Length: 224
Figure (tube, rainbow, N blue to C red):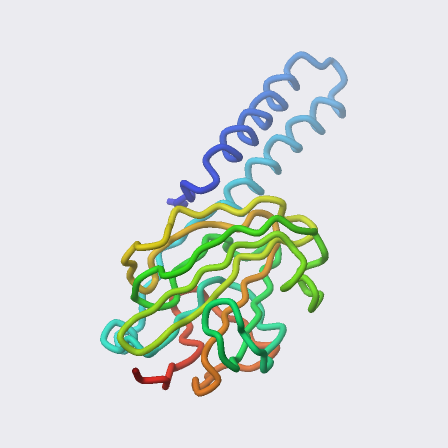
């Protein structure tokens, strides 16, 4: 049975309603070929809706459950960039940025990468540059989330793309969250940037596909 995300409930209702209208309308059309188009369109739209808003259960690796220094992938997708940056918003130090691109075919539900407390959150309206473009990390509409635990700090961003025009989240400053916990969604293709202290050990490489919760992307070494 397909599990659907609560973060897309409004879209799911609208899309399924349109699908039903198309299928029912087909019965009032005399021309078979036109009726068939309506039926096929309705079925395809249902399939697309169920696929895009799916929310599969994921199992956190056993070592990540015991080690707060391990960082989980917060989203499904392809690693398009790993680079050195100077993060002056939350970490306020030299850092490593890992950028994950989500295509429309990927699961778009976002997960918390480490257990800890939300220390910083802000929403920034912006542009809709294609999410694979390096400047999308700076200029596109996005959320900024800073978390801290006994090991150190992590900073990550939900970033919209050309197709993704809506960000959803249900966390705020002061929340205590567990690694792997669902916290939101980026709709219709997008990007997730994870920014870690420079001393972190990175386990992935550019071009690699990652799975939210199941892929350990890094280990923080900035012990307090």
